[in-house]
Length: 183
Image (cartoon, rainbow, N blue to C red; front, side, top):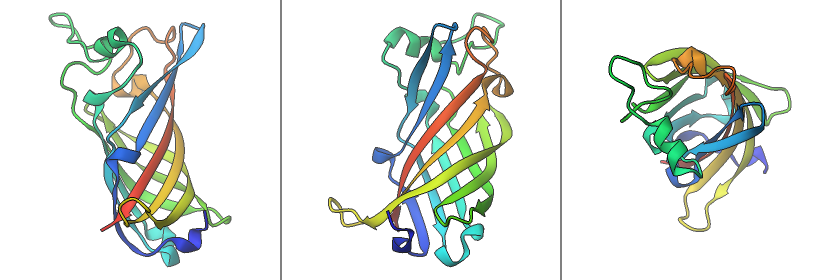
């Protein structure tokens, strides 16, 4: 967990070990969780100049995961004729995040990553509170790997998903864990 293990270069996200957890308030009764997996992307980083880092991510919305097949089907369901989908609709485009700036914190392990999130065809600015988690050589594939965790909250209505707001919360916390392998 020592950031001194980070080496400069270009890294690719490891989709097998990168995911985004989401949570909504379900009708005021309980929080409900789900996942976006198979996250891909790139990180260009130089530990001597963290503010110059660049991050991109692609999130395959069509692979959304919940523990309930009916809920997953509803999230991806086609709308009624002439209507908008309740959530993502069938065959949704991948979501993307592209950083616009990285603001390192004085602690040397945290940063705010500002960027643009495109989801459901809408692009909005998002700030992610990120923290370095670990760096080293992956014992399984021998790849130089660095990992981060992050947190942000989005409003689903900003991305055209107004279905039963506020009964299902508009604010959606996102918990991000991502591993990058040096290329």
